[in-house]
Amino acid sequence: MNEQNGASHLNDAAAMPPEKLLSKPVALIQLIVFSTIGLVMFFIPFTIGEKSTILFDHGATYLVNQQHTLSVTLLFMLMIFGVSKPFIDGSWRKNLTHKILTAFKVLGLVLAVMYITGTAPAFMMETDMLPFLFEKLALPVGMIVPLGALILAFLVGFGLLEMVGVLMQPIMKPIWKTPGASAIDAVASFVGSYSIGLLITNRVYLQKQYSAREAIIIATGFSTVSAAFMVIVAKTLGLMEFWNLFFWSTLVITFIVTAITARIPPISLFDNEVDRPTLDYERGKRLAAAFDLGLSTSRRATDLKHILWSNFRDGLIMAAAIVPSIIAVGLTGLLLAKYTPVFDALGLLLYPFTWLGGLPEPLVAAKGMSAGLAEMFLPALLLSEADMLTRYVAGVISISSVLFFSAMIPCVLATEIPISVGKMVIIWFERVVLSILLAAAFGQLALYMNWIG
Image (tube, rainbow, N blue to C red; front, side, top):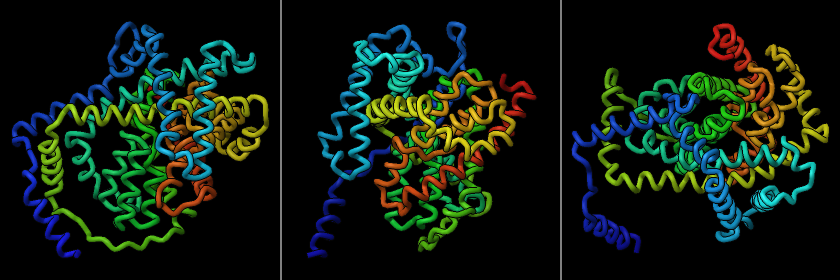
């Protein structure tokens, strides 16, 4: 029976038309032009109307400010889709975590309706509560994430990502204790999204190409929020003027922290056994191999509309899932921070490190940064009015801590990667401590050199 099935699959494969490929000259032009568009849109600031920022942020700002009614309408459509999806596909029943997250999404939509209709209780309508969450966070996120996903297609869809992956292979194993192939995973996670990164990581782990330890290093160290979300953090903290410095320094600090946590418990104690072939390139051939892989990827990228729509759709799905949660979890976190000692207690554990880092108000900073365990945006929300050094460190923490309960931790639990909630909380604490010390040191240097300020 198996042989017959195998023969049938071979016949099917033989009957399939050959894969359509672009010619090499056209693919090369496509690789250069589209990758350049992505790099320009993401990393080169333009001044429009006395505001200097990257291009797609200008577009999102226009929607939020000049087309406010339209953006609010689009946001509610996103939230309704995000709230209804778990009930339509039945994912809310999967486990307790999914049920809790679905409840938060429903609550987020209810809170948004109460805000728009002015029926929320007075303490929720204070300027630093629902108005701030809806106008300064949910609306920009709802517009930026889909637009950012669309622009990311130019960075990840036409060969540039694969080229970077091959070029990074020699440094992955010695620095991050992961195989060379994980370079693509790491870059995809950072410029794409943690959900896409975790999907890749889980798939490769199930194929037994990653050991348990390697999968955990990648999941807890590389699967950050996307570059589009970094724009939201930078906007909230008033750092967009220094976008390139913030982006690249955060990337470097995040990966340094990952290199350290890969070598200490609990990650270092996980099983590292794996049986896979060793892939290597001859000396002097790596650049050629990177170019060949990038070109071959570009040759297969024959359907521009499909690539753009696929990325835009992923951005819409992510925004729909996270915006209601941001409002509900964000409000919960802000209320806990304002009216309870929960984050004061957790902040005491971080206080020695914010003090060592020389932050002007170390206890306030520690309290704000500890809130990142609940939701990665909370440090940016709680410290948005702080001094420049604290705002910069808070921005880095929001990205480099990687793990948070409103989305990332449940996503990891939904995979087959063998790590518990308790160990993820320990890894979160280690990452925050290391990030505070590194970001504070670099922030002091940046202030001294007038790179920020």
